[in-house]
Image (cartoon, rainbow, N blue to C red):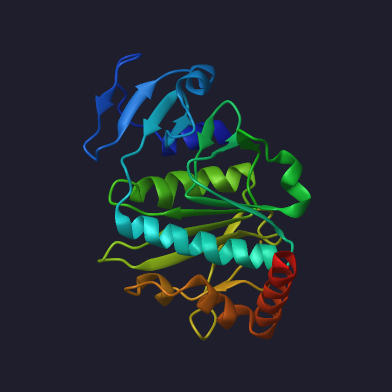
Length: 246
């Protein structure tokens, strides 16, 4: 079975007539078009993905989704900045990871410093080093199954699935390993319940942070992850700001 056949089977779904928009039961809209048409049709404010000749236009996320996304962006971007590891980008921003088959807009993606040359003004050409998707009622199958297969095939190094639905509240982490010949392996938490990132060495996530109301401040989480290193970083930043104000 070819990679394209496998992905096509995973993403098979009923399709409207060519050019016809059709509301899906989940509130999504779907539209048949080529990738070139998709590039002309979409703009920077549109959150949509192109998969195998079909565009999926997403509903506006709920506030909990947005808060978790904001917390993760703040935490990971602070960590990446502290250790000069790369850049974090949030949706809507295109990741063209499977040219000719799929182009996604992950909730968050991280590009390591050595791969920043693939990050253009319009999109990321190729797979990210880390992708994070936050599950909504309409996206569970897509996030847990379809994107898992796509990201594994395309070479995304690490994939986090964050599921904040009240009946689930779980995190799943997948990492590519040489032992598995580049295939994903599910990562288990450490004895303290923390998930450790391979894409950003030294970064870990405590899932219970995500279920708190309100969410913890990103600086609070960074202090827990990095300790004295982050304190020194903040002190140096404050010193530079004072000097620039003089």
